[in-house]
Image (cartoon, rainbow, N blue to C red):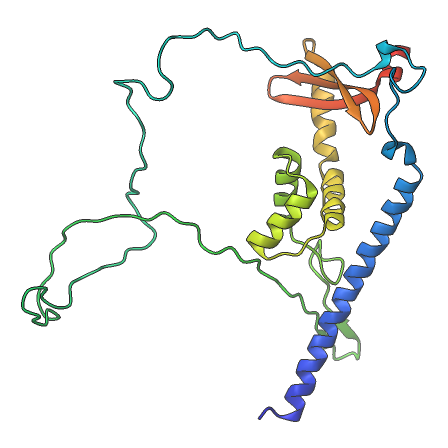
Length: 273
């Protein structure tokens, strides 16, 4: 049976963890409230967009219908799939596997004799490539006080970036940014992925908060790329129409070698400039 002091210590630790969770949930709730207030000020986003069919707007202001792409390829007359004589690629074994398991017969399949003390000889090998279970690692930072001979109590400080009771680390933030911004995974599906694969219950509001933080971190890099592109004598540029929150916009791209800038402007702004 557990001792009384041990039970009290466990309860105290649990109270501290719950207080940290409450602090985080309050911050997230406050952010969600601000998002709701911001969205309520923009009801036109959720109204049916006006066009020439349901208003007095001219047909030229309508969004262009998406045209079905037409392939310029001509039929080769060959059957689909790999062609005769084509050298295919197959899954190859690794020269240096991470782990090796030895499998040896323990008894004779013919007479049942024990083979434990008999010598063994290599016969063949097969490999299985798999991903280990992925589990998030929680690092707890604890501060301690140390008194000095002069009577002053010295307290340690938290490492850089550890600013709130509970937060997501750099790897989680980077993964969310990569999947959301580069692979275009919607926030709801991204929340499901983080829960199902990594066991992390990150809400869509939490993902949006992390993405906003990463946007600020990337501002310097983006500005450096923009500076290089703007000062280049030759720049590749292109634009296309885009529907953003029910309004006409131009989506722009400016490229210089491996540096690309993407931005958008309202069509009304582009016409006035």
